[in-house]
Image 1: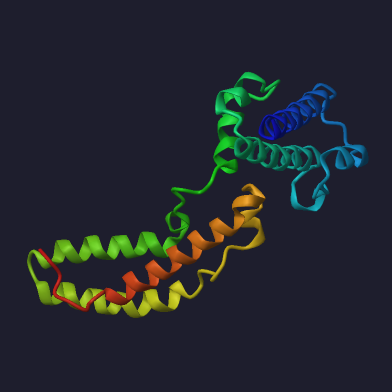
Image 2 (image 1 turned 180 degrees about the vertical axis):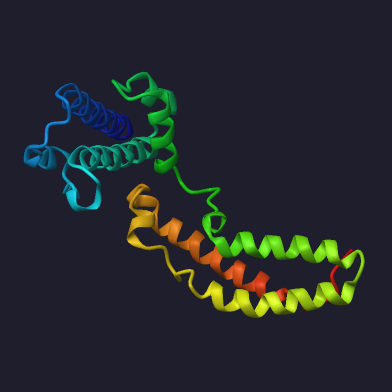
Length: 199
């Protein structure tokens, strides 16, 4: 019975925030938002956005991500978020669900230019190795020195902005994934030029 009560409470909170979103959306995103901050239980960060409406939408997104994460943890199936989405679009709900879920398959390194450069070096090295394995090895050694210095610009942990967009219950997991990705990047860079490039 306790589990059912928790599920219902979580679903009720989702309905409440969706209804609040619809009400404010229908009123044209009014800019007097003190009451909304109280309703959402969070500060609206006006200074972080180009206009007040964008800040309000971001606050709603953050609140919805939190209530969806809590409702999912309580056992609410995904279809119910879509079924009772109010004026949120299917794409809105899909995006919010992505941010609310546990980060099973998160790859922050895909956004790092150092990763793209490392891949390009490996591809060039493999191509050159078909004609001249020694030249390919020298390319990797030269690139290793450059990439080592550049990789230090990747922060050891993601900043607040990087984790703000995911549910708070999963932020520690996102930090863990970030650290693992950074370690792997450094390891892959260090391996450049250590052995003969395979043709």
